[in-house]
Image (tube, rainbow, N blue to C red; front, top):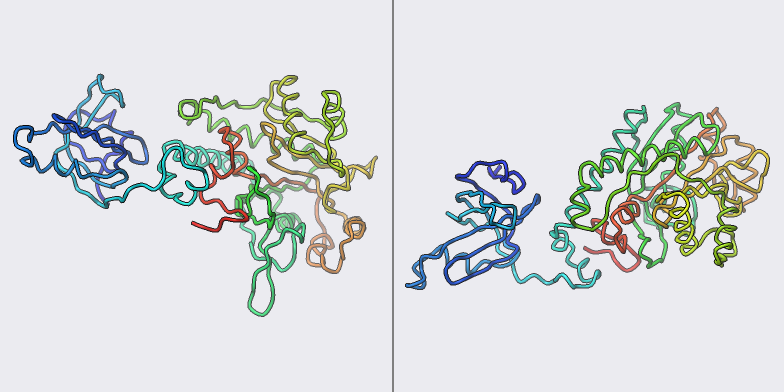
Length: 439
């Protein structure tokens, strides 16, 4: 592997010989001196070459090579590192001794003011932007912190199949694929399989993996393929136990992001990462509607769920009253929850469930699951489902299963809201939507 020094390591290096590699961001080809801004995955550095062909054009081969460099060209430079506080970019520069071009670049087809669709067409170039690099470093730190918290708390990581013989939730949002002599479906959720770990005696499990929804939505928050962050655990008394686990997990993730990237995020996006206090505010759905109506907004949905505007306004209220970016909306009506959500012992019209809002947008749904097979069958039939088609799932509950619950959370939504980005497209490595299957 090529020996090179990362840009971020240069500040700790003494003046002297150095080799750096990256891509050309800008070239300033002046009469007496040439400057090149070279960027790698860790940052940018200024390269300098005092010209020796001022009196005799063409007599300086290195100057000729620098003049021919195009934006985006990948190269390696060997030269002399010099610390100089007058240099605005990092207080250091590298005097070019030699340039080795690894791969020249054509004219870049996108610019800073290109539309998001145009930038997504050329995503591999768009990802070179420093703020995009930071997005995925933040996401890496966040996920590592979640995994560390789970492992430290004795959770088992599982990997569930993404090819399924039947629907896990809504058949209307399934992608159907050919599967030898039959049909298969892309998994909308690991819901059934993470529940299967409970009668298996795993106790506590988690998964971070793709999920697929055949949802023809073009909003800033929807995608047809996304990364789902899921957890499920045994021996819960109610959805309160799930919420307690969920908020501790998020605090661990956001603490890690704030500590490692807080200054970078503030410099790149102009925002401060806030580590939330616990417990997060909890507001029953019926109370949420009352709050919104008292503030002049009636949710137009007929099913009783919150709409995006209602979520946004409720978040404003929570920010004013609690100074919090998160809120659990709890106790959803049975009509807008899946058949496998457990119902209140004292009010069968409500479920032991919640949605978690972050900065005014839903990022997660969680619940205590119904573990009594006779109740599950009755609730499935009540929803118009055929228990025969749910046979493999219902079998999980016929041979002993503890009370359990969990959640599913969209990683890309969390990242979008954490960094205050306008669209999930900005924080998805390669976005998939109803009209995008490439690159």
